[in-house]
Length: 479
Image 1 (cartoon, one colour):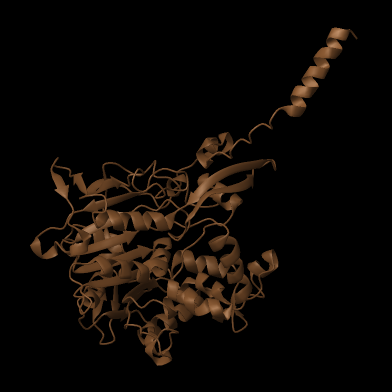
Image 2 (cartoon, rainbow, N blue to C red; image 1 turned 60 degrees about the vertical axis):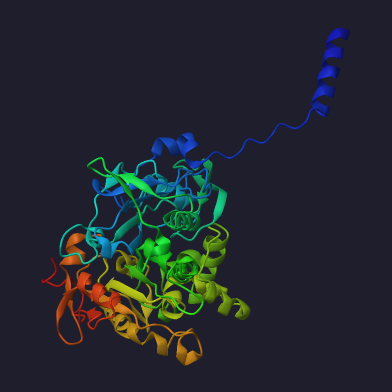
């Protein structure tokens, strides 16, 4: 070995020892990982149809930098200005549904639409239709819809967190079919998307305008001038309504021009569609797949796990403040991860619940999970009868809720209820389900969700319509 070569080796050794360590490469966003980019699948469920009923508005990231989807694309909503002077100050603000994910593997599989009907379109706004979308049900322009003339807002779901997350740059890991690790990064910003849309509707970034299908410029009214707001959601969107209803109501009341410290002539109401069913704390878990597969064998185990590993560690979730305020001192804050518990105990905003006693999705999932009730395994018949009993009990919430007046709380307004037996999961944005499915009131009148909801919003009788449960299966009268 020559002297010159030894000198070169020594010099390199010194350089290697004294050189600063190479900067760690950041974990890429989910859409920048080659394996995940290759398997990206929009999914078959939860997609919007292009149309001209409501028009697309992108949330400007310069003003709302955290209002982003899982993949960092901007939040999106669709809007239609009210028709007629009497509707100018009336609003429907709807949160879209579309499932969720709970860890690195399930989020990657959701992106690729593996073992789920949902896909990358529920994690990104890249595929949201432009310039507009079709509107059905409560958003329909059709004459039977009693809300057709209201200002309509449909908030696109792309955060996979039931609208509750606040966590940025969450680093996750999945494995491919060969067991190779895949590292990627996502955001869970459902809360920030909700907040940005509310702020934009309040003209926090100036008046909102869009160009309709006739090339006319339309400007939405100021939400601060509203007289009525329906804050609604289906499925995961219903979960967002449950957690945010009181917070959104209080925010809107604070800024509404009709409210003074002495009086508030402003009505905010919450509508939860397809996010109900038997009480989780009344079910048995010892026989369930959660117990055999994950060792979660009772109610506390299940929701402590959800609280710690999903809502807090993964999503950084925002939950109903009064639920957390009541339960945190007791050490059972995990109960606020149970949406049914929050709905039945902590929402003081006037509430309407629409649910099907044979809900094809929720019922199927809970029966497949092999829960039991009183030692009897859930089947479609038992699940339906338990759900029906809870729908019947909803009007009495003020006598049972933790925040009911009977327990010294602020009181729970009597909910409106619509319960069908048609096997449907969501209803609010579907013409046939919202405008044609009927159920009887206590007086025997058959009426639709549309009419029952309208009666409830206007404080009229017949704001409860529940189909008597007739055993497992879909009724022949369903459209």
